Length: 76
Image (tube, rainbow, N blue to C red; front, side, top):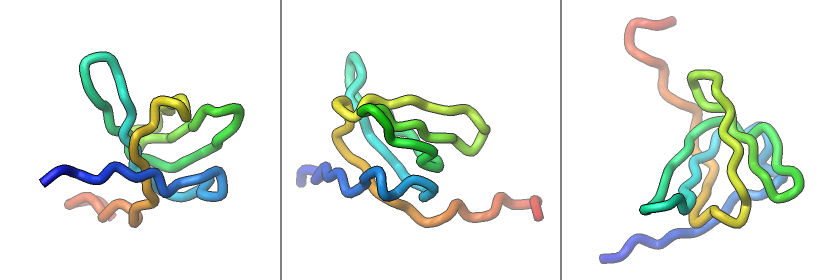
């Protein structure tokens, strides 16, 4: 059974936690984090570790809003 790749995110989702899949040389790469901006065809996503990924809108093959990350064990 083949996976269905759908993009259901838009600039209206700025501030939401999202997951994306994009084309990269040799395959695909995923980024999960908070969508900080979507301007000029570029998405800026802040990952849990604080780094920011910039993704070209043209490279997206899938994206959706996801629930908040569960708390990590041993952390308040």
